[in-house]
Length: 163
Image 1 (tube, helix red, strand yellow):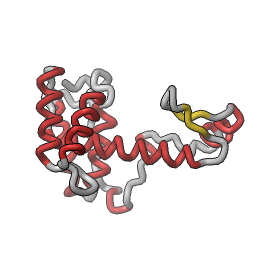
Image 2 (cartoon, rainbow, N blue to C red; image 1 turned 30 degrees about the vertical axis):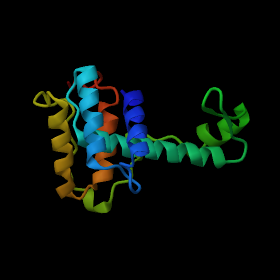
Image 3 (cartoon, one colour; image 1 turned 45 degrees about the horizontal axis):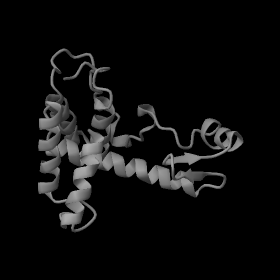
Image 4 (tube, rainbow, N blue to C red; image 1 turned 90 degrees about the vertical axis):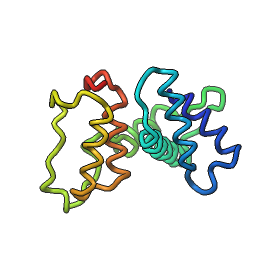
């Protein structure tokens, strides 16, 4: 899915459908339709837009790591390289590049917010999950954060039994 996602967005950028730092709505719609048809899933343009944010954040992390002393880039494998001592010092010891759901910084204004119950049997479809997450915007969570949470939850959709 991600390969198709990136392939179409690259084509859209070449067509001029990325006039600034984001794409036009028509580009997100094109990706959503293509994914829906090819993989027989329900994909919405908003999912595509949120996943693009996730990809941009991941790329920013890659760029940050590559700029650190002791790290390199293997162009054949398309991956970051370093020796074991550098890895242990930068990643394992400090956790500076690792993120889990618990690491996401919540504003103090969100202390009274109720977490989503992932075991709720009423959550049967991803669109419903997405709508529920995005409704939390009124609780003080921003759109980028909620998009990241959604992407995290559906990354391994079978784990959460969301179809």
